[in-house]
Amino acid sequence: MSNGNQGLSLEQMGYKQELKRELGLWGVLAFGICMMFPIAPAAVYGSVTDISLGHMALVYLIAVIPMSFTAWSYGQMAGAFPVSGSAYAYTQRAVNPHLGFLTGWAVLLNYILFQVLNYVIIGVFAGALFPGVPYWAIIVATVAIVTGINLLGIKNLTRVNTFLIIFMFIGVIYFVVSAFTQLNQGVGLGFTTLPFYNPATFGWNAILMGTSIACFSFLGFEAMTTLAEEMHSPAKTLSKATLIACFFMAFVFIIQAYFAQSVFPDFQNFASLDSAFFEVCQKAGGQALATFITVVLIAGSLANALDCQTGVSRLLYGMGRDEVIPKKFFTHLSAKRRVPSYNILLMAGLGIAGAALPLETVITIINFGALIGFIMVNLSVIMHYYVKLKRRGFANVVKFLVLPGLGLITCTVLLYNLTVEAKLVGIVWLAIGVIYAAATTNFFRKTPRNLTLLEDMDNEG
Image (cartoon, rainbow, N blue to C red):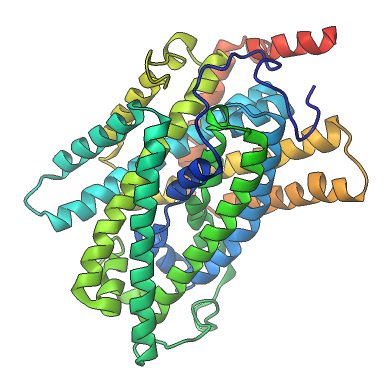
């Protein structure tokens, strides 16, 4: 079994090292930060501000609490099981193999929708910049670019991520400086605490519902762990990268939300919720800022789509290797680049098909799978370290019971506060997964082959 934070090697888990190990701490952080989308508040500003009744800054501040506990748990499980598959792999090994499959199935919904969200954002905003270009032409061209870069391999993805991160942060700084200047000149609310607490509109139901949507911005640390087999020293790298990305990006999100709400406090009078941040930018810095932020938003969505496609292709690779989905298709690696090319192409097709969905619908239901994954990873830490390895004593009780327990509880509260539509779609998706799993495991009596091998090795040891 695992020896704690050092974890098992791939060979001990019955796998071969087939993906190229090319990533260090910066490459992993670049991937995670791109996935967390530094300009994320711009994409969902209208929806989250409307749902939270003008408390988006508070929503992000609250969201960082369960997300920090969960980032900690991801780092711990990546140390124990440094393998592709993330929440799916951790739950499979620490809790139950069939629950692991259903966790992976739930997370798949999130990744597919997250990829779609980015394509829709690009289609909407690029269409506004270039009104003569058809929406579907933009979508197909974007999917082709994303797919082509991913097929070239993980090292090239890191270079693209680094460039797009720099570009996104230029946009964030431009917006914050412009908004600060306007507030200093008496525009909007001025420097006030109202974006965090406005007694005239505050309500816990609205805050929690807004928080459950805003959590999608923190998916980067989940996605980082899908690249464990392509990192140098994955246990050490991920234990640092998950927490760094979580806290750093929380600060970036809160700053943007605060200045946006301070400059344009009247959240009930946007011409369109989809383009609400564009209106904020016009007030903060005129047409020049609004146009630049639109370009940055398109670039950020492109970066995010790249990382979504990368993450889900590795998740499918891990599930295929365990033979819980068809192995021959989902574990196919390209001969030269050693990337799961069939999975990448499958996600490209689903991305084009899903781009027909309205933006608000995608935003509403996107977090169901993510929160299921977060809940199960927190549970996995408790089961693996506290229950199975019996890590006791005060420090270990805090690390392996209290912290993941708080993550589990707070993520469950957020799951409960998702919209009815999100929960309905999520439950239907899970039901399909249950039916598939029952049909392929003789009603849950068959254990995945890789875990059977691991159990045999443990028994021999």
